[in-house]
Image 1 (cartoon, rainbow, N blue to C red):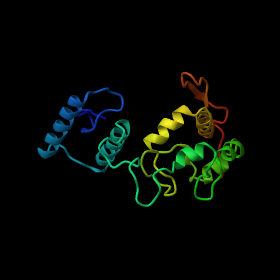
Image 2: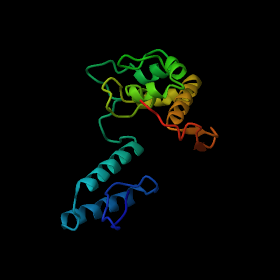
Image 3: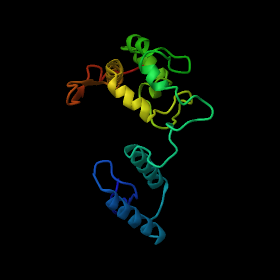
Length: 194
């Protein structure tokens, strides 16, 4: 993300997904990008703004939303002790709206690509984010939940099943759980008609 110039003239003030820059280097890159913008040499068009937004979002995610209002902080509207994502992965809460418990979803939708395609409210429950997304019923994942989920073997097993479920939906097979190696699945070329 932190390229200087290039054919498309794209430069981002945000750190790279694939580079391990220290905070000092990130600061220098951000300052150079600000200078280019203020000098008029940096033309902003829609695709550049979109790329910068994507780069900013990735940087915020990689750095754990440091310095931002976090869903870990108490919320006046809801009990901060409620761990919606953890409870869903512990099979104690249905995904909302109008959802299933995770065990039902993993079992009943395993080979049901049409249901997976038509129903989009489950995705933020299977793969929660640290921020609000499109499903207003899904709650941001908290650092406390992450810590507990990493230590809960049943949760980790369900998460792996959810990952495999979505890989299968996309026509991909997990070959090796230790290395993360993937390959095309048997249904990769199959035409999904809805």
